[in-house]
Image (cartoon, rainbow, N blue to C red):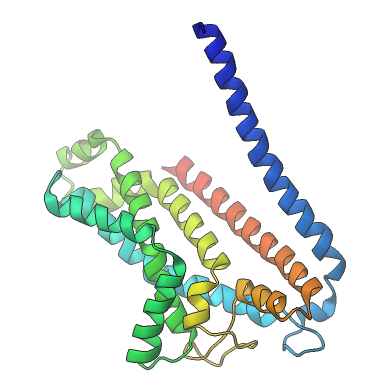
Amino acid sequence: MNQKTESILLRAVTLLAAALTVGTLLFLIIYILIRGIPYLKPSLFAWEYNTDNVSLMPAMINTIVMTVLSLLIAIPMGVGSAIYLVEYAKRGSKFVELVRLTTETLSGIPSIIYGLFGYLLFVIQLHFGYSILGGALTISIMILPLIMRQTEESLKAVPDLFREGSLGLGAGKLRTIFSIVLPSAVPGILAGIILAIGRIVGETAALIYTAGTVAGIPNSIMGSGRTLAIHMYVLTNEGLYTNQSYATAVVLLLVVTMINALSSMLAKKLASKA
């Protein structure tokens, strides 16, 4: 087999893989839209949930609160840890390698393990009970490795000439990081945050054990509440509201798409300013 034949074969395999991926994605989206759109009724967006309207509005509000609270906890910790590993820690040290190995290991742990950990620590030991706060803390631990690794790679991608130029002009280490390095790495950091948001919105196992499945809006973050993904799971599991679960899937799909679109626009604007 000559080089030209190998190139054609490799291109064909690549195109086939891309076509299968795009085709599967389109099939899932079209299937969800066809099954869910006919059941998107005004009653589905009522402020309070009951067995007549099966409203998803409380779950949507809980999803937004859970996402914001989890990001407020995970982003400072993840970005701060990445800054230390890249900018302050000695390069090639065994400590840095150990932290990276640990982070990669945490990224591969199933979400139900995080749920059991959150249940034992936050629900039982700290007496939070089933609560939005317990769920947010558990989710923040889950997405922390993702944000940390993505931020680290983004910081490492910033050329050292930027740092050397800033330091040569008399700027301090801290000012160089926050004025030169971080703005240049913002698009990559936002990419990690977008992936984290997608994981938060679609998570069920960890939140069932920590946030609970109450179909209502809690009075505080110490109250129990279900997210959209849990709401869809519960409706499907009960077997009585399968059509409404498809409608919830449509809303969930739209929410994720809107979040990704807004985040991408923000990343492009920040990248152009940087």
